[in-house]
Length: 532
Image 1 (cartoon, helix red, strand yellow):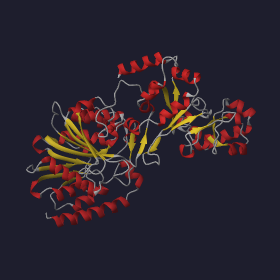
Image 2 (cartoon, rainbow, N blue to C red; image 1 turned 120 degrees about the horizontal axis):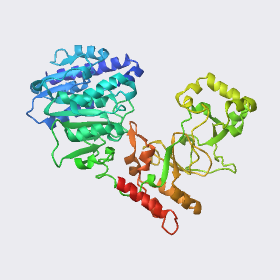
Image 3 (spheres, one colour; image 1 turned 135 degrees about the horizontal axis):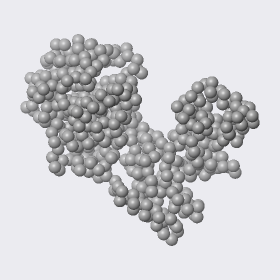
Image 4 (spheres, rainbow, N blue to C red; image 1 turned 180 degrees about the vertical axis):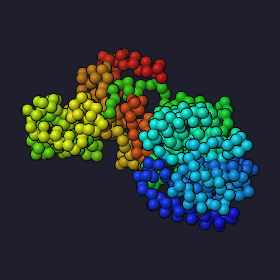
């Protein structure tokens, strides 16, 4: 097939993809994880495969999640036709599979309208030496329990990978494909980069380090979303189906394109075995030292409270007054970070935040009988919540009283839970000094000083500002290295991840002379290091 014929077919495929996507409800595509690979990226991946396989290797190609065939189209455009010995594609959805089968019918492709995860792997002589796939990005909660049990067992049988129930469908595709690969075969997987940091990704990383030779992970800049219709940060993972060498190193690259990254670095596989956060690389050349103090040594860190329905439970002063609700049924709560123009919140004489947007959280301390007798307006408001189904929501119905909140006292320091790296300051996370008695919702992380630090802050109140200054001077890379990132540059930090951020500067603020808890905290830091 000549170059012009391939270009014509690719143009038809691209038009077909657009028409088929337009004919499928977006919610259905999201649930099924159907996000087509851009043609330029597919071509980059196949050119990389050509260079890695070498000039004289004939190709047996398989794509377990074919779609309309962007990777197959790129294969035809990159590899000499004489070297393509076999090409197989699996597609479970006939909406895409049948038109694709018609499009590619005269090209030698064997397209199978089947569920790859239920298909029988070939015998040893018919296995594939090139697996390239953009597997369906289906979240775990869209995989029914019976399917999870089947997939987990099949993946364990295929490659020994023990996948947890929180893993997305793409992890099963990667593990199941092992049985389809020829010895020494090459695989390139376009998958969400979140596996590099999250707990469920541990089994995938063990597989990549122990069962195969991990060659290269290229992570795209999260601000450069590869899929216009999916908010996901993507990576291309390359490996060979052969055991790794003793002193094997893995190439990590970041940003730009697969062929021309902005940054790259080789990292020893032994380093990766002991580092739970692979997205540190290639920006870092080694994991963070495990023996230094971290924020978790100085603070108890908790997510802000989940109300069950912010619009119902969080009201402003005007709405409370209009409804005649008793103010003693409310406590102050910080507004969303976008409404905090300053990173310091002062309190008035009652401890309420001195803010233009003052909000209050409904959290009555009384039982329903007392409310009905003493506060008829509040009783009517609660009845309204029941009528609207709020009392039956998951969070509310699992509380002792559906209308009372979990215990989240005000914290002197709070950190934003989500943030983007393209803010005007370049810092995706903000630390806020809270002088008020306001609690916070789950868009914040709340930092409660440990006992020794609390003693020091009470003895020397001016240290609050010094600690706050330190928190906001934590290098951005230290914060990002502990968190996780999504497409569009959206970063997230969980409490344990924030607790792992280095905190040497806080330790240097104090000396044994002016901090009664110094030795206790030093011992705690030492214990944490020994456990690590």
